[in-house]
Image: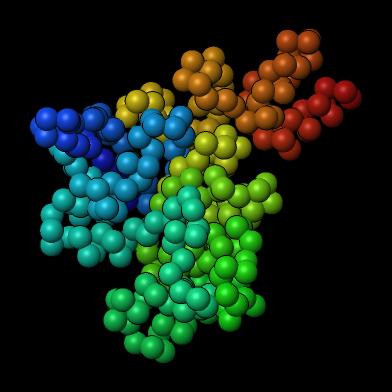
Length: 282
């Protein structure tokens, strides 16, 4: 069952030229796709491809210039749906420092539920549960500015989880993190998905996209490719034409095949590559 449905979405940014006349720049150009309830969808593309604009369109932060975005059947452009859409779809952005608003970790996680007017006892439960879900329960009394980048991003995720949404859109949440922090944040996103949450994960790290159920490739505001990770990353030349790479295991397998090593075409992960090499050696 579709949880997100995007139909012929167009979004234009408008600014004034030197003469004061409005000039439109198209960021999303006729995009249509669906996201299944409980799925993990990755969106990849170069800088300027429209990924962040699309992300903000999925919870009503940006409304379509034309076309439609439906969240669990709710039209994001209908004013009466704004509150429900924002409750259903939470967002985690690239820079955790821009998302943290309080001087104490647990106060920051409580910020969203407090704004919903939720009972204090229920807020306490949500805060504790959200912090445990990102393995930050021991840090609830700490100051966020003393935490690492990865830990701050976990707090931002906990703040989203405390809202108890049905879907979280991650807009390049690992872009400013070191490899360890990236693995931790991706692991949390996958864990939330395994518990039934719909996840949309925007990234420019191909290894992260390889963990998804479904991959959408965006270029110039248009969907150029769409399919499973194996379907997408088997098309190395097409991705290179879009200035995108493939996961390291896919690239290594391709290079080894050119050197005469017999390997299956379906290799996607490091584990699959190691296993195939061991079989080839045997």
